[in-house]
Length: 257
Image 1 (cartoon, rainbow, N blue to C red):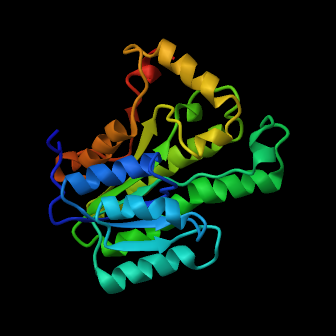
Image 2 (cartoon, rainbow, N blue to C red):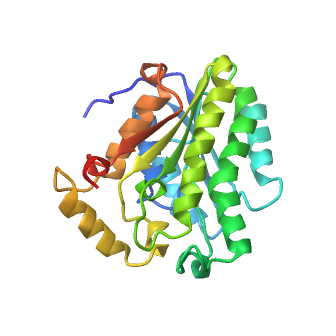
């Protein structure tokens, strides 16, 4: 299939690839297919063997560690991008985390420390990413993050990630307003459930996928490739008039849920 967006001559950063099944991996593949030059990250050395094949497949020029919980690591990544590239056109932020004991209990019973950690990693890291990326987007650009329908409606077993993703979507709107005069736009891509390493931490996730499949008008789940094509469009000049949006990539599930 021919690429639906043109990213020739553009440079982008993809944060949050865990392995070839990640939503971020599907997005990276779509960016590369559309002609972009990429930098991709892995969480830590144990994760590198799972991410490196993805980086090689998309021809990534930069492969670097990035754990937003480690002080200075995100800043160091952007310093490297500034040294080696000097500019940046788009960023995909696909990072989320909650401690298992806080995720697997009700929002009433999650710990304050666990809630704060989930908010910092899953939401505030997007704000920090936007802050560091903006000076490199001298010709404008696109900032994208990944969210889920549980931000807007109660989804069984999604628990504290619901309010965290709601905060992320609100942050996108404020970032879009703050950076509009620089020609930098921001979006939250609300992806339907995909069986990824991150999603496996959600209780009874397989049941959720079955329920969504049954209730989705098309009767099928979205793929990481389909999500990637939407991300590539948003990163391209074709998506320039859009900003501050929650863009649904869920085969219409949000319309009937």
